[in-house]
Length: 83
Image 1 (tube, rainbow, N blue to C red):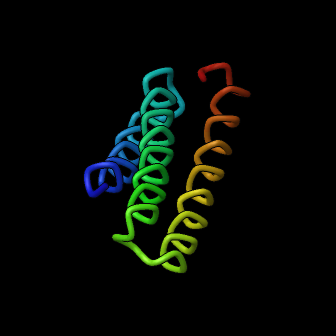
Image 2: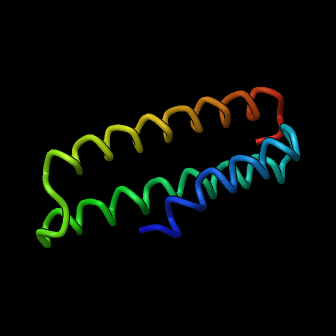
């Protein structure tokens, strides 16, 4: 869970640093996939009783918001023909 969470901002930063290029968009997709992975880990932790449902709900909502923002960045890259 920690690795997935740490991967999101790391790949966003690297992708942003490369600009709206094909490789930058690839890194944004990696960040989006890490966010999806994090959500999965959160759900598993909830089902296993390791995290309270209320905490998971808050974290999942935040994770989904991050994915929505990444999707917006990817749409922008695609409009420029580099996604």
